[in-house]
Length: 226
Length: 122
Image 1 (cartoon, rainbow over the protein chains, first blue to last red):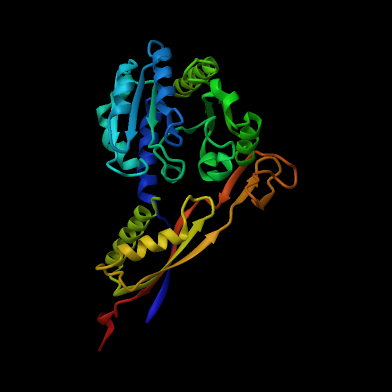
Image 2: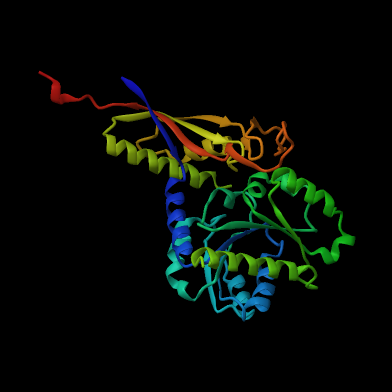
């Protein structure tokens, strides 16, 4: 005799449980955390290098640099002045999961951290379903990609809170329309905060730095309401 | 392409339940895969069939239901199915929405063979 048993159990419930624990731990320390996602080559590491160079004397920034095979990104971030940069080599896996973050977290001094940034593996599909305990996902897109990318990868753009459009210094040589990409992204997610930047020239980055500072302050204020 | 690791998680979860409940076998696993979950049902079934070999789930099959994206408007509370990836409330045109269905990957049910309870036999 066979019998049907109701389950309603999330496939990634174990990941979600670990992510919830991580979120609570970061919350308790008043740390603002982001999960950076993009296609390979959109400029995640470049944006983080710039961010470190600009903000390293203002905020204590910890980074977890996910990479499929090498520690090259982590080396670049250390060279950019990162005090707490932890490489996380997935050994082939196409995404980071909460278990991997949980293993690296003990190497970070959370009492000496204002902002934690996780640089995910370059991939707009697989990382979407894996909560890492972050406050928000930040998705990068560059003007050498298609301006229909938000429509092609709706799961990722829907789950992100911020979209950074990079490489705007070479916009005139690309078949990429800024208004179209913004329209497409907002069709998927009307709550997106959007930045237009060039990590090469620095254009547009001041607004990004200001916004980051606001997020860190907001997070700290929530911890110590006065 | 992370369907194989998802298939692996499903097999782990189901085998844990099997052991916990002392079931004799599992004939089918019913899944609900949201249209916005980032998972391709065909690739998931392929991964599952490859991984189940030489496990107690060898003769088990997946029954996958693809669930559409359903959102609720934060402005007017209207609940609607999102069509053609347009996340805009059809009633009040607000784009401020909560997605209530379509991002999930759920094991909805399992069809199991129970072990006969011998304690009540004469």
